[in-house]
Image 1: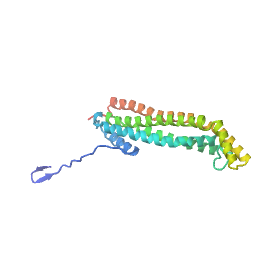
Image 2: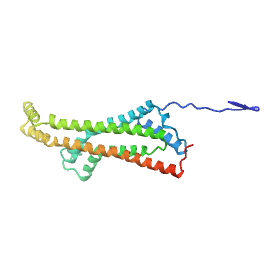
Image 3: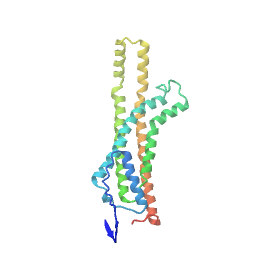
Image 4: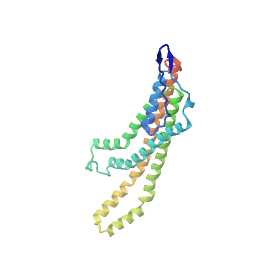
Length: 241
């Protein structure tokens, strides 16, 4: 506060707390706010982002991709089973093309939408400060996605190679006979399981393909953003103050 003559000029000082993103939208909000400042030329050094904050951005990215990825991976056998007509879709054993497309989008739609959304976020940086936020968030997402892919791949192969072997399916058929199921019912269940177990192998490789696609979209986005930033600085559109 300063005094000039008889008047008083008050200077308000706002103390800004450290960023501590608790979730994905918190992290994205911090990135967008600092991106807006950088567009105005407020380029901040990377060192202002502390080690703790880097780990928090990484953790947010990891949790958001790993947990949602595992849940979606569990839906893959159902979607693949519906596409291959092992599972009735909307109560019909003979699904239409629309039904098959719906099942496919159920398996891949959220992942692609999430990847495009994340790819858009990865372009919202210019200087090293916000760039570090983006890179740590993306690193967590990539590590979480890769780990999810490995877990789902091994889990589906475990089901196919250990849980649903011929010996175990024969054992299940005998138990169903002991429970007084009719021969037609036991036969139908047995052959359905024999046909359906291949779906787990298909699902495992489907998860690999969709995960690689999911990881590629934000990586390409951040690469294109880095080239854009070089052009902005070279042309003088953005200047560090």
